Length: 297
Image (cartoon, rainbow, N blue to C red; front, side, top):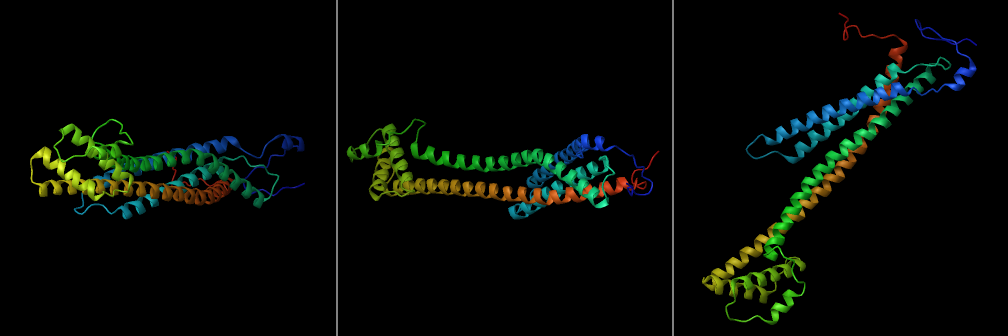
């Protein structure tokens, strides 16, 4: 049986038994492609992160538009993933040992399949890196939410000790118009704020009046000013609560967008790796050396 081979390529005849015992999958070439793709991805993602951090640190008067930063970061990440996988696929296609028992179409398919194997192997490492970055962003937003929540909790409780869930209802039985000690007043105020937090930040009118009375009694200020202080404290707690809700929303959206971006980049990268591996195989068969790029000295 005669096999057509490209011009300038030597055909090595092998027996049927040798072909049966050998694998069409060239793992050394695949591993080389995975190493190259992973290395390029790590270097470029690290570089992009550094540039992104510096970009956020620069002042532009009114601040940086988060949407613009997100678009730039997503575009950079997409380009890095595609280019790194294509580089790894091309290297694997170029290094793959060709078995001359198939026509050109079958050989191209095998080259492309090797590119997909590079994509599959490098995707595991790339996904770990990408998910780590997304987790860090979500963790940062989560920390902001936790900080705001803790701030609201600290204002509400007034101390680091755990609050008795029945403390609010018990305190209502012992309320009086007589001045109380500062520590007792702070504890009662903490139970009132904590109870309001359980009711979506809603304060009963009787609680507002009682807070104003104990503030006035312990500070010696006028009742109107005491009421203003109570209203300001309630407004501050509401603002901290809103910040916590907003931070949680940002963290959730960041995670969702990051997951979609990762899935899209991996899908497009698979196509790029398949195509690049075929190109590498064609250049291997045609003995393309790119003398203008890689000159020998």
